[in-house]
Image (cartoon, rainbow, N blue to C red; front, top):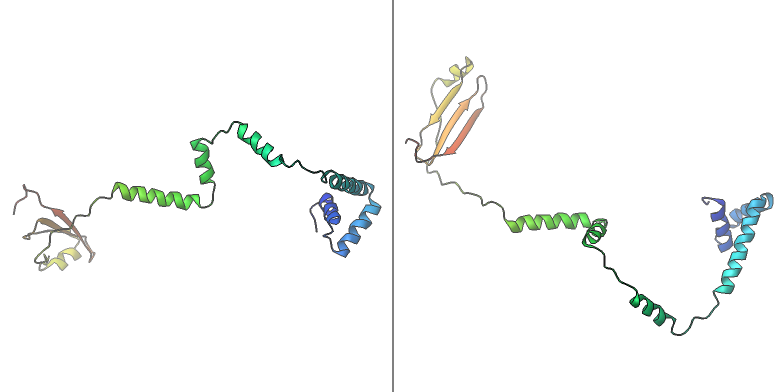
Length: 175
């Protein structure tokens, strides 16, 4: 129905209540003097407003108001006020995120380094390594290859997996 009695009275005054709700409100006004007093005040206020709003405005009323507005001091909002107002809008967060990505992209990302092509793949194979790994020994094998990279293979005890480190050779490395 309505949140409080005053809202119900205003709805009755506006004529938006259905007949059942209107009958209920009128019955309550008959039983409750405070509600009837509020109803009478609302009707008096409505009559007063209808009478007062019939006044004619001067023909240059809008021009006078605009003249007063132009004469008043206009203070633009500060930069922080504009930022706060912008960020309070629902679209602000996606726009700010897109702007941040665009700025990061404009600054530049590190260039990817393409590794030198390897003519022949290095293969680490040794005979009898399965028995050594089963006994709990750690196998470390350095593969000598003709490329610009050092390859180190580590096999953990009891694991069929291999860890491979590849590092670029420096001038001081042998081979």
